[in-house]
Length: 206
Image (spheres, rainbow, N blue to C red):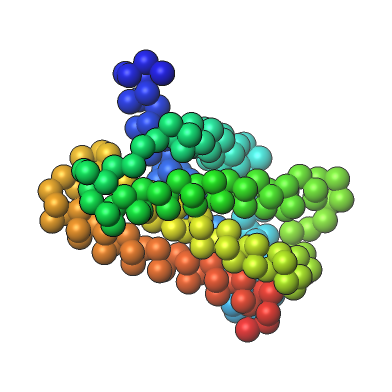
């Protein structure tokens, strides 16, 4: 890539990871968390999202197109990226590696999740409600697949948020980057809790 173009593409990649993809992730996990309050609460929350006006357009503009761009460029970054141990040290170099590993895992997870809950249901005309997800998550393989996928996704988002703050010049000093590390750790723990709690409620009834 031309250096200026690559700079722009990477900035856009970083921005889309937070806005709108990150915001959608949090919203999606919050909606799913209603499962912890029972099937009726989950169905009402899911039904509200399903009945939003212009839902199809919103899904493509806010979710699918940004995710496709983020995923395609993300794969390019994985294939061409180099470790940054000299600049950030061992811990950040490890996070750098995990960001790329979880990026691939998250891509596989999201692709399957969309296929299972969107593409297939177009032909079967099934309703995506509590019973639909329960039929999936009560299968041990899919429960663990979703568990790993959710943790991978939330880590990728939270650690990507740290990179976003550095990339956009928000955290420049070592001190601000340390504070961002703790803040993004709290973000990771919070959103991961929402995801795991939902899976336990639907898949195990707890």
